Image (tube, rainbow, N blue to C red; front, side, top):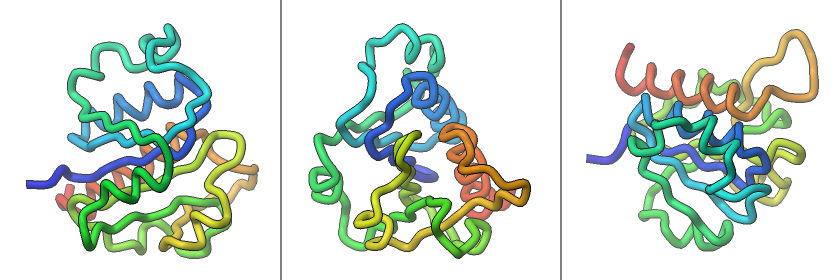
Length: 152
């Protein structure tokens, strides 16, 4: 059986954010896919401190590039891009077991060429601001996807 979901981080920059995302994946039973280059090393102290002992509960996949990630996908895989530029709210996605939720780097988000090639979703930001913290955005989206899939 496929995992509940799969979280994809495209060129993440901050070890602490990735560690926190890994913890979220561990508690949800989600896979974590990291697409290089990273702005840190997986052996960084900050990453280890953020992920704590949860890394043992995460299926972690590293990909050398977006192309390598795409080559790993099974036919029919659904990949959702998350972006502040999207018009569709994430609550309207109709998530399914095994979906990929793709997020961009902390400072740049997803590049235009990537988000325009995928169905794109946004989290509401009624108070304004440029964007949510990466780990917060992943948490909100992943738990909504889990709620839709499992009916929590």
